[in-house]
Length: 203
Image 1 (cartoon, rainbow, N blue to C red):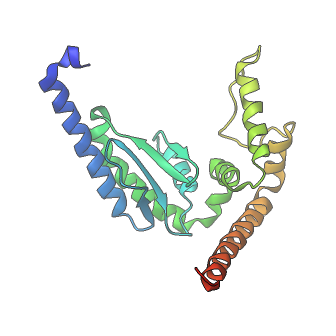
Image 2 (cartoon, rainbow, N blue to C red):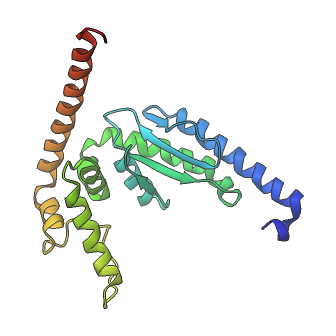
């Protein structure tokens, strides 16, 4: 790129990219219920929900339904954006659609148990990581096997022949509720242990 654009051309694109990344960061921070993850210094921006009523994976589903390409991440659950000079003109439209998506998800709490939001949400919370590994292996087998089948990720749990997907399809809502309770209990026990340590002599 540097050879084709020259130093000045490259710097123009770099400045446009960084301005767009800053616009995205400030725009996300201004939306109630969202928070930028960390302090990104370059053109990679990730954001998560700090409002229990806003499931970030349901927000991702809503954005995707509106035509945006969405990159979901785990630990923490968040949406990951790569900003470039090429997509800098779309930041304002993206932020407006993001604001509307957050409002919609807040008004439709059932969305967290549907579509990809249910699958990503449960995968992120599953205490048995072997189940996650099994699901990923099955997808890879299908993609790189002799038939080269692409997975139907838009309809998680549709294939009941796969044990994990069949489980999610039949009992997704109950599993989600159990995982939410488990996570709450884990957070409470962690808080209790911290308090206990603070009471011990020498702490």
